Amino acid sequence: MKCDASMFAQLYETVYHDLYRFALCLMKNGHDAEDAVSEAVVSAYENIGKLRKAEAFKSWIFTILANVCRKRLRKEAEKQKNQQPFVTYWEEAQEQPDYGLALDVRQAFFVLEEEEQLVIGLSVFGGYNSGEIGAMLKLNASTVRSKRKRALEKMECVLR
Image 1 (cartoon, rainbow, N blue to C red):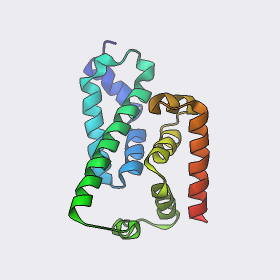
Image 2 (cartoon, helix red, strand yellow; image 1 turned 90 degrees about the vertical axis):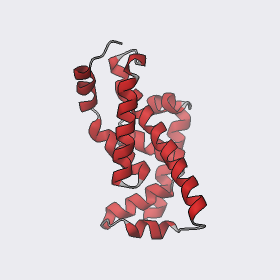
Image 3 (cartoon, rainbow, N blue to C red; image 1 turned 45 degrees about the horizontal axis):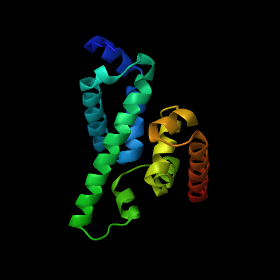
Image 4 (tube, helix red, strand yellow; image 1 turned 120 degrees about the vertical axis):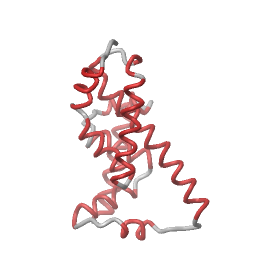
């Protein structure tokens, strides 16, 4: 696909809010989310020639962002593993001021495993259906629906 800077900007403009919200859910920190989105956008811009159809841009850039977030989270986990033996989730949550239901939902989201977070994030913030998520994560669409249902049930249990 031929794409210049202005066309890339137009495509990016349609998804930038969703990209940030998705990254924020995965990264747990606004600055880290911004960094991940920036890295994903630079990577997407550099590789735009690999995109075959403009209609696939949203799915393509979310896949790039999901991979960037995973890589950063793995690096952070490795760094923390080497620095301190154990920090509880509750202590981490207390460092980030948040209020009411938003905090509860956020805590419930972080109880989920990485793949469950990706499925919920892509579904809720990306607006993708199970088939599209399955293609991105290399899973069957029915598997995605099952994982989404179980993840939402897990969150519901935490929120009770």
